[in-house]
Length: 237
Image (cartoon, rainbow, N blue to C red; front, top):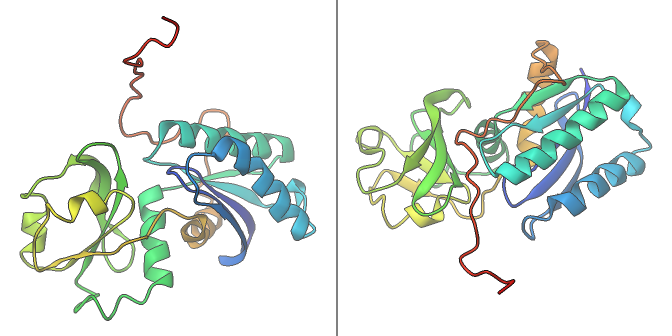
């Protein structure tokens, strides 16, 4: 039983949710793109103030650990660590792909689109540029069935799994895969993105099991190394 602040910055959406005993208490979100640096602390301050709370009233802070945007994850994790240090409260890390799946399963009525939900797999996809996505497979109980990976999607992707079950594809990386993965068992859902709402139950479970992170040494799950690029055009010439 806990009061937890949940922070999601792994994609283009900046999302902050306040969860109490595994239930949504308040939510702040911005879907206008990568503006986490300017929105995140404002959202946190607002959500606490509106609920007459301070950081010391929290039992912990949960962070969406990735995979996802390198910059977004750094902003989210550094902010979460700062709150934990200052308030002396624990840090909880939640898988981004698992929380996306949890949010979908909890809030969307997909029974009309999925014939056999109990047998279906859920495949969250985060855009990793070109035809690559960060993805995994989860069952109807939000349990991991295929490890998280960075996959380059082609017409042969998920063929084995699609041969005997439905797969629900969703997330900001799924749209570009819709015309590549052509299978009667492939179900694509639009406008389903990462949100702190999906973290609430998972964070509560981890808190109750004392599955906490070392605030000093925790690092996000980037999955791939960050690669810096240089602009093609030199603006100083």
